[in-house]
Amino acid sequence: MNLEEERRSAQDNHDRLAGNIPQRLSEREDKFADQIKRSKINSGKKLESLYIFMNELYDYVSKYTPCKKGCSDCCFYTVSVSEVEILHIEKYAKKKRRKEEKNSCLLLISTALHVHF
Image 1 (tube, rainbow, N blue to C red):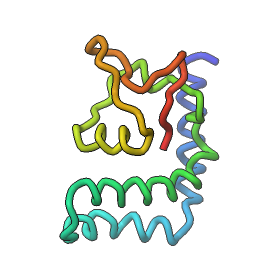
Image 2: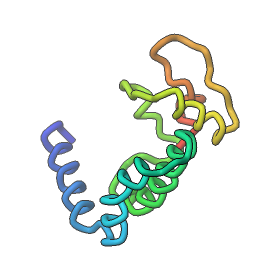
Image 3: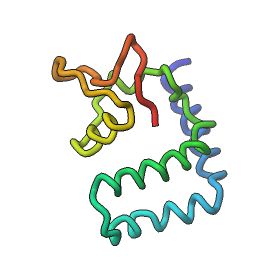
Protein backbone atom coordinates (compact mmCIF):
# COMPACT_ATOMS: atom_id res chain seq x y z
CA MET A 1 0.00 0.00 0.00
CA ASN A 2 1.48 3.36 -0.99
CA LEU A 3 1.32 6.49 1.15
CA GLU A 4 -1.78 7.92 -0.51
CA GLU A 5 -3.65 4.62 -0.09
CA GLU A 6 -2.63 4.50 3.57
CA ARG A 7 -3.93 8.05 4.08
CA ARG A 8 -7.25 7.20 2.43
CA SER A 9 -7.55 4.05 4.52
CA ALA A 10 -6.77 5.97 7.72
CA GLN A 11 -9.32 8.67 6.81
CA ASP A 12 -11.95 6.02 6.06
CA ASN A 13 -11.31 4.39 9.45
CA HIS A 14 -11.51 7.78 11.17
CA ASP A 15 -14.79 8.61 9.45
CA ARG A 16 -16.31 5.24 10.39
CA LEU A 17 -15.12 5.61 13.97
CA ALA A 18 -16.28 9.20 14.41
CA GLY A 19 -19.67 8.47 12.91
CA ASN A 20 -20.31 5.45 15.12
CA ILE A 21 -19.13 6.46 18.60
CA PRO A 22 -21.89 5.49 21.03
CA GLN A 23 -23.82 8.50 22.37
CA ARG A 24 -23.02 7.67 26.02
CA LEU A 25 -19.25 7.71 25.30
CA SER A 26 -19.49 10.93 23.35
CA GLU A 27 -21.44 12.62 26.14
CA ARG A 28 -19.06 11.32 28.80
CA GLU A 29 -16.07 12.54 26.81
CA ASP A 30 -17.62 16.00 26.47
CA LYS A 31 -17.92 16.30 30.28
CA PHE A 32 -14.77 14.49 31.34
CA ALA A 33 -12.25 17.37 31.28
CA ASP A 34 -14.45 19.62 33.42
CA GLN A 35 -15.10 16.82 35.91
CA ILE A 36 -11.38 16.15 36.29
CA LYS A 37 -10.57 19.85 36.57
CA ARG A 38 -13.12 20.32 39.37
CA SER A 39 -12.10 17.13 41.18
CA LYS A 40 -10.18 17.45 44.45
CA ILE A 41 -8.26 14.16 44.03
CA ASN A 42 -4.48 14.11 43.53
CA SER A 43 -2.89 14.06 40.07
CA GLY A 44 -2.15 10.32 40.24
CA LYS A 45 -5.83 9.53 40.87
CA LYS A 46 -6.87 11.95 38.14
CA LEU A 47 -4.57 10.16 35.70
CA GLU A 48 -5.98 6.82 36.81
CA SER A 49 -9.52 8.12 36.16
CA LEU A 50 -8.44 9.22 32.70
CA TYR A 51 -6.96 5.80 31.95
CA ILE A 52 -10.14 4.05 33.13
CA PHE A 53 -12.18 6.20 30.76
CA MET A 54 -9.66 5.74 27.95
CA ASN A 55 -9.86 1.96 28.38
CA GLU A 56 -13.63 2.13 28.06
CA LEU A 57 -13.30 4.28 24.95
CA TYR A 58 -10.52 2.06 23.56
CA ASP A 59 -12.76 -1.01 23.86
CA TYR A 60 -14.86 0.66 21.20
CA VAL A 61 -12.06 2.33 19.20
CA SER A 62 -9.87 -0.79 19.00
CA LYS A 63 -11.98 -2.13 16.13
CA TYR A 64 -10.63 0.72 14.01
CA THR A 65 -6.94 0.77 15.07
CA PRO A 66 -3.94 -1.46 14.34
CA CYS A 67 -2.46 -1.16 17.87
CA LYS A 68 -2.57 -4.50 19.66
CA LYS A 69 -0.61 -6.34 22.34
CA GLY A 70 2.80 -7.23 20.92
CA CYS A 71 2.91 -4.25 18.56
CA SER A 72 5.92 -1.97 18.90
CA ASP A 73 5.24 0.71 16.27
CA CYS A 74 4.83 3.53 18.83
CA CYS A 75 8.31 2.78 20.20
CA PHE A 76 9.91 4.15 17.06
CA TYR A 77 8.63 7.71 17.08
CA THR A 78 8.63 10.43 19.72
CA VAL A 79 5.96 10.08 22.38
CA SER A 80 5.85 12.58 25.24
CA VAL A 81 5.24 11.02 28.63
CA SER A 82 5.15 12.92 31.91
CA GLU A 83 6.75 11.69 35.10
CA VAL A 84 3.33 11.00 36.68
CA GLU A 85 2.43 8.86 33.63
CA ILE A 86 5.71 6.94 33.92
CA LEU A 87 5.05 6.29 37.62
CA HIS A 88 1.54 5.05 36.77
CA ILE A 89 2.87 2.75 34.03
CA GLU A 90 5.52 1.36 36.38
CA LYS A 91 2.87 0.68 39.03
CA TYR A 92 0.47 -0.92 36.52
CA ALA A 93 3.16 -3.03 34.83
CA LYS A 94 4.94 -3.84 38.08
CA LYS A 95 8.16 -3.03 36.25
CA LYS A 96 10.64 -0.20 36.57
CA ARG A 97 11.80 1.67 33.50
CA ARG A 98 15.12 0.72 32.09
CA LYS A 99 17.83 3.35 32.21
CA GLU A 100 19.05 3.09 28.65
CA GLU A 101 19.96 5.38 25.84
CA LYS A 102 17.98 8.59 25.59
CA ASN A 103 15.70 7.66 22.66
CA SER A 104 14.93 4.02 23.41
CA CYS A 105 11.49 2.86 24.49
CA LEU A 106 11.69 2.10 28.19
CA LEU A 107 8.97 -0.57 28.02
CA LEU A 108 10.06 -2.40 24.87
CA ILE A 109 10.93 -6.04 25.48
CA SER A 110 12.13 -8.21 22.59
CA THR A 111 10.62 -5.94 19.91
CA ALA A 112 7.17 -5.94 21.55
CA LEU A 113 5.80 -3.23 23.79
CA HIS A 114 5.29 -4.66 27.27
CA VAL A 115 2.46 -2.32 28.30
CA HIS A 116 -0.75 -1.60 26.40
CA PHE A 117 -3.57 0.25 28.12
